[in-house]
Image (cartoon, rainbow over all chains, first blue to last red; front, side, top):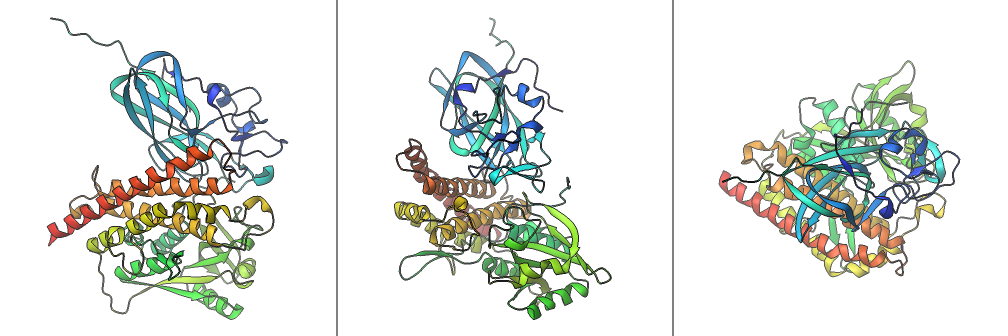
Length: 192
Length: 333
């Protein structure tokens, strides 16, 4: 079961989605997850699509994930984060990359590890977020021998850090489908 | 059908040989054997061309260090293949390097690629003439029975380099598992029969534009037809792919060597080797993308700019791991 922590703030990825990893039945093949057209069947996402804030028309060619190419994602409002939650996957292997949280010139590197979208089991401490019993292979052919997955991982930030912008790495094999910041509690102030 | 994987890995050689080792010696940790290797398998020809040997070469040496003979039997005729079936009939497991084009379960290459793919066969049933095929590949996991006749084409048609393999005890029974200095040399030293890891990375750094041109000339997967024409571009990408797995398994191996001063500790050689393997994979995958991109694509320069920093980080991590392993070896003396 997928549970997003209460109060988690979903980062709006809409302007940055640049890749179509999901494919709806009957649609012509696109780039897919790996650039060769291998795609996660959109119909298998179910309610996850809403949870991830995916666009209407997901699987019909609209970009649905961010292939990391160094994008800088500005938050609507800065917040103090106690953690980062990522849903996504690697293509062409597992991925382990640095996302950089920024605020007022201060930067905090956060390592994010995600298993490959065709991995049967997690390679790191990530867990399965969504699973399909088949893959749309090259040419949009249903392939029951492959079971694509989306993975989720949560990285605590201790101590919490202020964040106004998240900068992604340059590794287009890291696909981010959902991104949340987990707000920290009120900052304590020293009393005399 | 969803199948639960007992052991999987993204390198078919490592996955199959680890499964074969487990069938032979259930209590041996595959990482302790297959991971005790840091060879690039890369050489420079007299013409300066970068070539890679079959990963089986260094893995055979690795098995030998642990008292095993990884016997490799080329299959060129049906008589050669019958020897493998005789071994299966005797109750032993074997690994086969088969032509993927004829492997029905292997959706990645079935009817599209003549690349070799390695799987394990065991539990021959003479009554039904079937065998259990275990493919512990991460993306293609398969564990089921099939008639052995269905493997004849994969093993006997064409000349993809098909072979079968078995693990036998070495006659000497001698083992040499404490090879930290050897691993250090393979990472950053004379490298033995191959280029060391750092020599390979420096070669890539110095001739990156040439290698990108080579990769750019590779046949496209979408060009149609079965992939048979392995040119220097695909061979370079394949060689880097195997070295990535070698480093990944080496990192796993170092984590198992807790008696060697905990090389798996945070910031230790296991971690730096693991990071080197990941950066190398990013370099390899970006080179593959760049080879298929138009230079006027606005992403081309961004991806190209990643290569040297990633190679530099790889170089530093390999040097750091080699130095740490050398220091550990000296401490043990």
